[in-house]
Length: 178
Image (tube, rainbow, N blue to C red; front, top):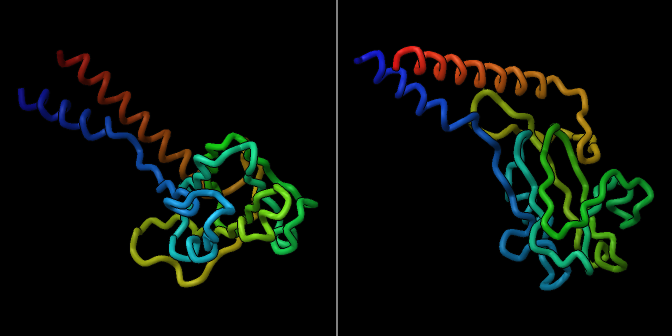
C-alpha cells in the first residue's frame, strides 16, 4: 500500500508538467497601440526577458495595426527593408527561443515613427533563477516556425524527453500495481 501512495504522489508531481516561461503582454494594460503615447522602451526595460518566455501582442485591431519583426537598422529608421517576421492576427504570441535582441514595429504608416515599436533584450536561460545577468546579450531573430540551431534548445529538448520518459514510467508502474 505505501508503494501505491508513493507512485500516486509521483504521478501528481509529474502531472504538473515541465515549467514554462513567463508571458509578457506588450505594453501591459495599454497593449499594442499608437494611442496614449505608450512608452514601450520603459515597458521593455522594466522586464527581464529570458529564453522560454513569450511576448504577447494581444487585443489589437488588425485592421489598424500589425507586429513586424525587423533588423536593428530598420527598427531605428521605421522601415521594413529587413522584415524577419510578420504577425497580423490581432492576438499574437511570439515565443523567445534564443538569447539576444529582437526588434518589433507596427508597419502601418506613421505608427512606428509615433512610438509603436519595442526593442526586447533577451537573457540566456540560466540553471539558477538567481540575479539576472549583468549585461544584455544580442539575439538574431527568426521567423515563426523556424527552428534555429541553439545549444539551449538541445538542453530543453533533453529535459522534455526525460520528463515524458519519467511520466511514462510512473504511468506504467501505476498500471502494474493496480
